[in-house]
Length: 419
Image (cartoon, rainbow, N blue to C red; front, side):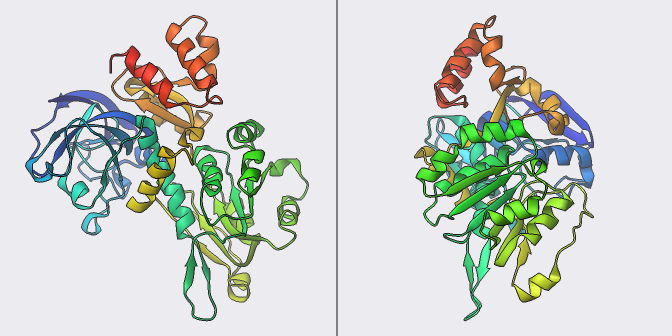
């Protein structure tokens, strides 16, 4: 079967190509990819090429398919898995495999397995690890965005607090405590703002900072302060550039106690150091944002680490349980991953999007790999719809859902292209 895919040949070398997939083996599954959201991690892969830890050294002669936040339909099932999976059903997948200690992952390491394509082959280790998941939701994009949401959930689950009596760690953010999300109005940050509203062991306070007022304004629209209040959480959005002393302001919001859980969502040294200073007793700071610089460092107060039990950690990716939780919460309408999405595109837009990702404003760029469609901001649908009937329909659909991408809009788009 032929597939069309965006493949990496090395640093800054992406190509959209059509080629033959081999016949699947008895322990493999052939899938049709429908949606693939673009991750900043793929941009880092593009810039590093074979220097990236997950990228094979022979990528120049055996290129890999990029993209790891993808979902679609199962087309053909090898004999080994026919009792568990069926052709025609939707799937979601967990890309963080860690199979037998190897770093291989879809979108980084595989010649025939990745998201930026029309069809790909899922190798046996994915099923063996339980990382291919059945998905019965109404939309493909919710399954795609389950992966970034699982990373967010993984961060919340991995934070911990200590117990001096027996030294066991209480996992997760502190119930009734204060959470600080630094650089939190980007796409992943918005998911991190909404998630605590849906969990049982809620913090009492969530404070979110960003230096871009337009991003703060959108955050207030998609995750309103009033919505958080109804969930029992005091939510505050802060632009630190608008105050003389951001440390004092942020500390005052906790009554001077500091933050039990801090998430750093931008790889900026000053943010990490600020987060460390703002930790409460037994506070946990999660450096969530992965830097491109392998020598990235920041100054940490080891006096506080010793005397006030503060601790620093980092998480990358989520596990399969995190993904299952993300898919379940999304299916039940408890979280709305669409808050992350600001642009829609087709497979023909992926190279440009990935290559310029840090310079394109807005949040998540969601692509549909079965179609050609120029990258378009959801906010531009209405204006462009004056001359384009499809965009007019999409604008009307998104308007019904507080300006967010949604299952109805996805159906309109795919139906227009006969998918």
